[in-house]
Image (cartoon, rainbow over all chains, first blue to last red; front, top):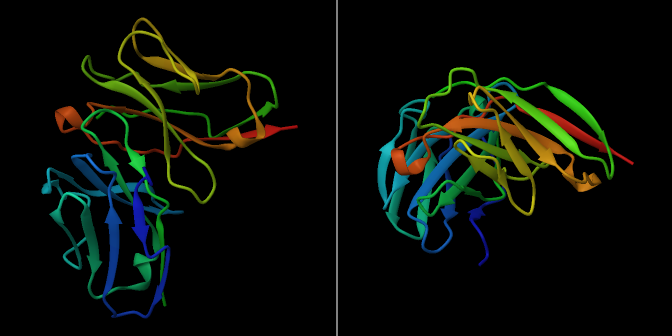
Length: 112
Length: 112
């Protein structure tokens, strides 16, 4: 298995632009998580899905952030409009409903 | 979820055992202890987890005290590739709608 796949690996955009991050979980996993990591705040859980349904989005910072999971093999995290303070590494992880989460390589986002 | 306390950093000599402590004095009876690590610029990696009993896998051993208020992760023969930030987390686990809340972790540096 290729593991969790995230794209793009690096994204540089200007303030005000829309950013879409993509994630393909490991096949057969029924949980999907989106995390954000910054030096100031560490690794934070933004939202997680179970069987494509959002379960807890209490970590989503504000309405500019949205996440979708249209099917079991694809999820997106969208930021519109983006701001410099959104600069971070965004990780996607998936789990087979057990106790082990498998993380992707992350997307490094820079908002100028 | 209960919070954990870890030392911010520790050094270990290559080939020696690394013992990483974690305090979780407010852990509840149905919460698990998880350990993850994050090698620089990579996504976190699951190491091991446990509830009450000691656990061992190919990566490490987890020793949980009888009162469950603390635990120790043991890397039996540290290598340079074990240099990473190690996170101790207590959580209900995804089966019970639990979430992983990552703290600051312990920066472990393995030296030749």
